[in-house]
Image (cartoon, rainbow, N blue to C red; front, side, top):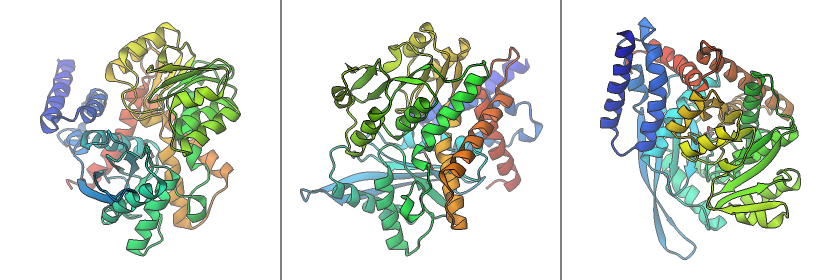
Length: 452
Ligand code: GLU
């Protein structure tokens, strides 16, 4: 009976979210994953009963949608749509990245802001959840066009953010260059030099290790997962997707710890390199990326051992560990089946929601070590939190200091996931663990603050 009630509650909640947010499939996917694991937990806590905590968490505190007009190099006027989702400020100022990509829409940013709330809670740092972006495509744009777009975007966004209110950072399409332009425009309009953005350059308040942090954090988390089955990363083979900042950090750290990375991927397909992607290949990856080129084919052309597979995803390659580090919904059920059949031990998500719900369930059913991005990629935003602290105390920490703190945070997140996700047979369900651990802190803060 008890079980039936919980199941029914889950179905009712999902129906409610579906009705309230039609045509938002990514948002629905993210909320569903949380609801399935958190509603049974809520049912065990009397103080949460009737408080509509999940309903409140699934409704952004504020959604800002704005016009971003700018002039391209040919003198033509362009119009993009800008967004900032201020999801939840129960445990700190809104915090989360800005994404510039043609696929950006309300559904994508709401899913990211929702995930961010749980992720930021897991870091143990005082950061609420937010996300923003624009449907702007940086591919093929000149440096001056990028600058003008960032200025136009910030001209509106600056009215809604601030170091104690909302602190954006980078995400897909927004790196150090864009953060610089956004920061410059904020400072000019507001006449304030503050830590309003993270991921800044070292010369104006950035933190050492922030560029590497997401990828390094993923690998620290993966190391912890492997430890639970008595394994380490030395000599293991890794299949990595993606081509950007996160994949770069992952590859650097895996290589340093003695693992071998066999693949990377771009929107055009994936590269398999039997010799492993290391040394000068990692530098070349960075070089290509900073020139605005994310074509995996161009990477493959440079190295004799590298083979390009057009239009394919890398999950067909046999490996010990898989790390999806590109974007949402890039690992499907058929990929999960291939990975399991090929004996994968561990899947550590580096992107936000790269695996579909049925792929996740397949991994869980087959007792593969599987961690959701909101736990394993939290090192990026955690180090943003460390950047905020350094800005507040007006000091810069050494690389070692930041890296040590990052590692401690990742070990802490892993422990929290284990504590809440351990099942009777000893298997750790990291999805359940991350969702419940992330939920509890936000829920407690919301309960304490009343219905606001
Ligand atoms: N965009 C990153 C994420 O998905 C970083 C956010 C931040 O540093 O605020 O977590």
